[in-house]
Image (cartoon, rainbow, N blue to C red; front, side, top):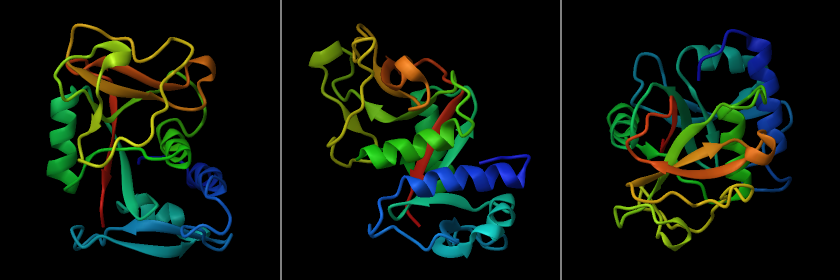
Length: 201
């Protein structure tokens, strides 16, 4: 995640930490944060560490990534289609396009994609229609990382999923986009500009 302002990062993390339920396995003291630490001299040796909130800007500047629920996340920019973005996540991080399994995780990723709640910023996540075609409400969806399809946040205002006649992938509109908030099924060939990778430390 790239940023120009350390204060902005701290505010983003304050919002994200507020989304973690009190008493959960992922809760940390108010002045601490969990982060996926990638040592600059050995970035393949990723591990989750707890840091002071004041050290966040330094850690993100040298390539560390946000953490939630024991996984690491990074928003990548680039006009990639579903296949090339999935391959980029595999090649660069040994992960996949992000799967989402709860509202808390959906909110967390929404904050990463659009931290300033500016709207109109979206990203591809790892939902796919394994049957090969997007067929609206009758489609069967799966995650590219092989985890269970046990949560969905389809946009209700536009009756998603509703795409037809093309291989499908899932576009996340962050939960800051008002009536556009939620997931949209979109042709896999479309470049979306951003995508979210999720990987294990």
